[in-house]
Length: 288
Image (cartoon, rainbow, N blue to C red; front, side, top):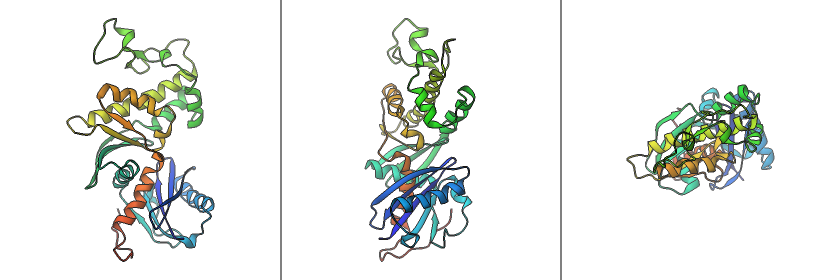
């Protein structure tokens, strides 16, 4: 069995997916390390072990993400290709959802917005708010940087202790703004607010910010379903807070299965669709 390894080398983690040459996903995993090169080679070794594969069975590596430019030449002498991250983001999201067109919000260290269709995947902007915002602020407010610990704390928190809601500032009903909607993130920090309350407030702020920007990006378009991918999309409260934003703006947020690996999957699929001719031989690739 021969395989293609699609690799998304991000700012803080590396995501890798193993594809059979028949375009079937064998497995995928995520690795975090002190630097991008260490996480890349750790991810390769881990997935080979997990799938009971050898390097001889790897036909090609397809790299994307901000760390892809740090890898020079071929990996282990195996043909190594680099694809544009935004194209991989869009391609992966369309594959995971079956949509023909959508806005993709890839939430990793920061957030990237990609208008994706079967014809093209176009980067339209982004935000510095993302997982890096969450862990950076948590390090000062909570004394914690590990995402699992932040999430565990947040699951015991209450937004009423930190966020200012519409019902806190108005007794009148506002049709477009239900009473529970956030008026100001961290606008009402009670003296009794706990570490857990701050953790939940941080997570809520990230999803409300990213979700609102995504909804605004879809104004004056026909898009009503927004696909959310990336590491932060896997947090257990992601769907809940994105649903709240969606209700305000008349859109729906979709977090597909394997959302963490959407970009790595997209990279591998670009290999199959663009870098092989009809006879199955590898065609030339312009390094990006």
